[in-house]
Image (tube, rainbow, N blue to C red; front, top):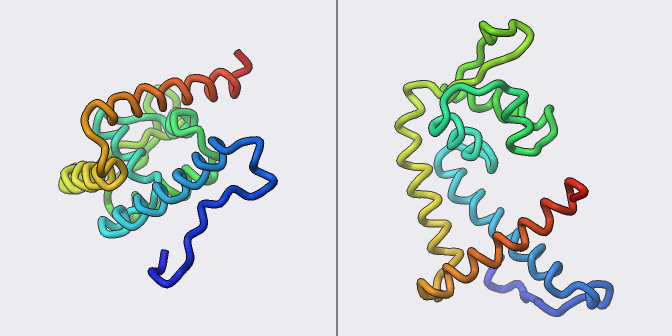
Length: 158
């Protein structure tokens, strides 16, 4: 936000029945924007770091598994992978077990990016949680896990 812009956290009248949802929406947008600024410095778009984290941690994965894991539209994941491939961070090939499937793997060259992504996420964490002590951070994380569980149960109909 530009320093001269007036920031309003006032709750719109239509959101009065959901002040927490309104706050979560605002915080999610601000967090996504901050992440985007940090990732742009690495030549990444938001979400691409999640693909890379999975590939670095778990090794090659089918494109269909990445789509399911990230819970994104197939065309979005395809575009992400195209950009990552053009940047030399991933390579795609046919799955030897099923020629119809595409395997995605991190390139050796992408290893240089790993430390930079870790540093960006650490910076984002500190930016996000500045002013909270260790106990508050732990409690916040537990509360977020409960909220996530509620939303996951709702989205799967459990």
